[in-house]
Length: 634
Image (cartoon, rainbow, N blue to C red):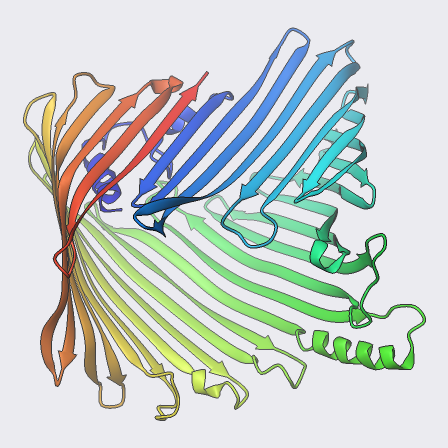
């Protein structure tokens, strides 16, 4: 993790004028091509992770091909006794293949293959499953804006030792954007079913939307949607099949109104209704227990907000204010079977009562805003804040989770460009959270959480070949419980932290440079008496990381680096207010990095480090870790 932080900070200093990257560190312009292959590998101590992705979407002549493949592997090595090692692995592979051939302007052939293979020798229960399906049919375009695709095929499924197979069919349609006197209409739909005797699977959906642009940025859009997903699973131990049917109806409206050239108001509302049925049925030769009953969950959700945003003509000043309201009402119930006996009716009423204890109503109201503006040509100020209230109610007297939660956050950030060689900034964040349980059974958990953070930062370039970034952080976290009784396990506590990060890049020549990295973090935790604002410190930690890398770039696309990294952690305990060293760990070892930029064709990144870790008992362990990213666009 420290090496990744080191590389990220260094890249930010060394490539300020380079290409922008996404969250993975891969250049954005490397992702613009449709066809790509990606391999990610990560080893951290005894854990190995592989991620592979292949995406091909191309056409030639009247033919088209689309391949989407994802592969993930996780391996953990554990001690198996007698000096041996055992590997625990989980694997999942998804493959989707689509082939198309145009026969005429309005008619074509389609073939689809999908595959899912899962295995896990770490889990207890279902450790392997797979599913494969092959579909073929026509691609019909009766109208320029309408495409209908009927497909027919076969599916093979495997859950553990049970194998199913059966007929699979799919009917899909797509309504491309149609302009009806300024109103743009679009939609899509699908009806898919797999009949795997004795199971059946389904995936249906339909969406239709309409949008109208009036003047400037003023526009209104409506969307209606329906989803139905049906999945069935074997419960071999109980000789049953569990069926889950999820139905969702939704309505969405988004309205943008341009009040002024620089002022835009937005109103959004989304209403959805969901019903989830969980049903059990016996396998051949089996029978349901009289205490088993099917259940249903009904959920109503409302999500709405009103937002006003402003941006000056020169783009220097911007702000927004947003008011939102979200409501979710969830109701649980048991479904009565047919011809219940009096004894079964008693059992059903008890099960139904248990299900209804899960009923809940959650309502959240929020207000947030942000304003950024220049104080002077070299100074900027950003103010942001928000407040939200959550009301969580449960109608059942046996559910004691009723509570109210208040959250208030505020932030002030400044940046000042002193000169071409010096930039400074300060960020001050504050957070206040208050949780109140309304019933006495849970009121011992009522608490107030206060967090305050101050973060100065400095970026200095004393010479064209030197750049140094320094970031400081002072954080205080105080959690105070309303009731400080001895028999209550919840106790008020405090957490305080100081951190300092320094990242310095020195360019020795056009091809050779040095990167220094330092990270120091001091933090402690203790019991707190808020009324007297006193505390009894229980433990403290001191983490130190220092790294040095020598970087060589034989070309603009290639960079190679080698270096050393040192890390130590000291743990302290407090006995009668006296601070004593409890344990000390230290590790040191070489690091290396290789980065090769292929431009639009991809990128290769490799980072590795090996360390000798000295533990508290004096033993030394040799550990190696590495990360690798290979991206090829074609």
